[in-house]
Length: 302
Length: 276
Image (cartoon, rainbow over all chains, first blue to last red; front, top):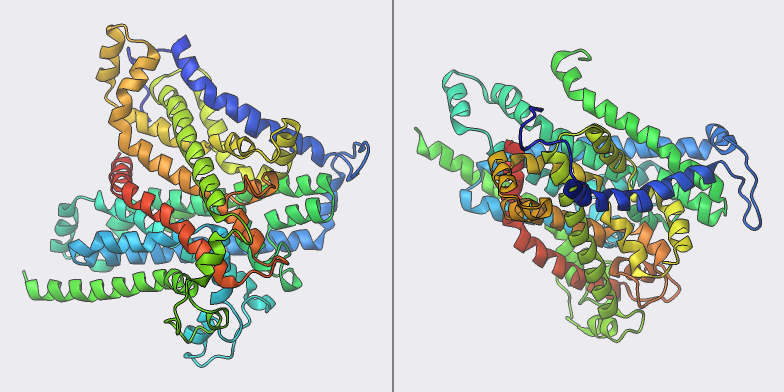
């Protein structure tokens, strides 16, 4: 990033402070304060009525021994990784496919693909209740039975619950991701590709050496967006499993677990501890994804 | 070049992508058709077209037998609109300052923006709920709207957007002695597509919000549509599923309408943004 000081880069003045202040004021009151309170709460005992006691990091220590917590961590990580890879893989494919279509169809098709993203998660979950519904559900009727497999009980078979929420997230977000990638691809100068084609570069080489580096920043943005959304995922699994983790906790996600601890179990302290413990997991996942492209490309860290 | 070959590729790709679009839209079409089917037909996916068309469930929906549909829809529109406009304004103002000024601590403020992205409101839902109660905003739309005005993504987005504004323009305005707020207002039209793109995205996210409105909004008069619908589902009210389908379908129409309006702006904004 360039940072040459000039007349238009003065240090500060009251007008600038006045413009920036409202945002940071709101941030302080409605984000930093609850976050700080939550941390303080996570150090207090789970007393429902009366004064609670300061217990330090007891709740966090208890989480390390809590098998349900680890299950939630595992589920959330798998859910996130699967959603990101399937959704972005599909989106890259769809974006390239759309670019090959007739010009007039490109806009309408992209628009249609994005409509699921407008579907509120609650409605989505409801809809998917029917998609996943027992023997007569859409998925069994149209995909599983024609392929000759046995009926899958998507929402009660522990082996398939996670796939069900992944499918739901993929359906919802792939259109938007396709749109982002299309926008990145459309900024690519056409003559670069033509020159590469004339030089005898294969379609695969053109994709790997030209298209992919061009969309890498966009893909990274998409991945970050999806990861944060997956980690904060609540509505989908809440409606599908009615606030529980599904059978055998196979669909238990971290935010759902925090909700359960606090509102079902009445433990506001341990619930807050679960919530806050999500932050390092999320940060770790983001770092993993941020360095993944360079590892893939160069085979080493930096 | 062989026009024939590329023509065939275009045709094949078009057909394949249209099919993909159909797959993506299928559940929604099914939902729309489900709202006019009888409840027993609804769960039988083998029938696509309703055997008998009935608007019975729409009548039930509007009769407020289970919840007041129009009130919930209005609540959703108002709370999401307030958050969309408010967050765009706050983020644009702060992003303008961080994008154009160089000062000590700027990197820290941007880092704070990254932190807000890392810790979304859903994650602090619990302490936020308690805090909103303390402020006396329980069961009040303001308790959902005010926290919804903080967007870390918005700050980062607009910080980059305002770097696209030609510096000469700002220098000129400054030489003429315009106040900082005036200069900000005068460059706003230049970034209009970005304002619309972000405003729309935030509007949709606000519309979708579930956990915070669910905790804070309790009475029927203030609940948003997704919360009302979710409460209906699986409740002891035994509402027919088709009523839910009808409510969900009608509730999506305003969103798709706003999207159709914002789509071209969204596209040009994103292309500019990625290109720079």
